[in-house]
Image 1 (tube, rainbow over the protein chains, first blue to last red):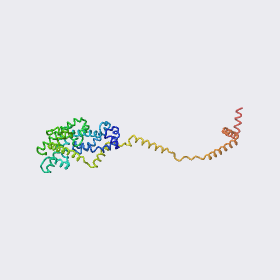
Image 2 (tube, rainbow over the protein chains, first blue to last red):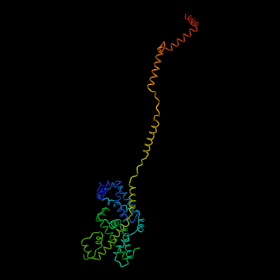
Image 3 (cartoon, chains in turn blue, brown):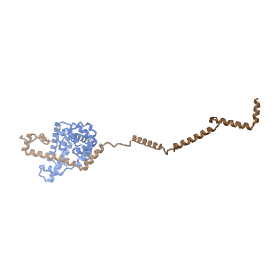
Length: 203
Length: 168
């Protein structure tokens, strides 16, 4: 079983047939569910939706397992399904998404403090920490305003920590396209952060 | 490079593509390096926050696995589907009929020796009667009739003579 999954993580089509049986699919879920959930929560910022769509992702993978041709890794294939589900979710429930985006957001304070340390500000530490929290929130908010492709590329790169090649495979676009979208997304985010630092704090 | 990084170059750096020329500039320029570090930390906070949001107890993952499994596994077969019910009813009927048709206590069959003895005795009686009789058994009714007529004529002789005269 472990061998089958290992082969599957590479490019094994034969192994895919074995690993997609109902019994061994449990193992597939076990191996990939955390990363799929992480991807979805990065894209959606909604724990409930991420949980639901993680389940949907695996169900869809199971029902359409015959269409898997082994041209990419199973993980990339699962990412594609998850990204498409997230797109549909954002498209269909945009208003609810936004409500939850601002109500469910929680950031680890240690990371925010770390960010706060890098901000060239002479204000007291607590204030800088608050500013860092605001800036992280600002980045998330800015990402939500990006075009769908820019947002996905940006979040897959920085929230999901994927390489540009992995992003290109997941989104089924050329590497150059990924770079172009990422550059535009970064320009927008940098501009918003710069604007925020020079203007009044975010409310 | 005798200038600060432009926007595209800064984006390339953040995306992870650093040319040797840009790298040497960053090593020499504190302002560009500081700007890069600020953005990198900010973007790293996204990764950390995604990590934080996706941290769940084992029970969560287990429940999720069960949810997925329960929706993936095919429903159990109904072993008592109607077609099987008909088969069950037919089997019950066959067993019931077989039970009803099961033979009870077998009738008493006389011992073959006893039957043979009775037959032999009856045969001996018949043989003795046949030997003692004057006529063969098929003519016994005729003999009975003759005897009756003989007895009648001996009791009424006139009737016999009159009849004799009439014949003449």
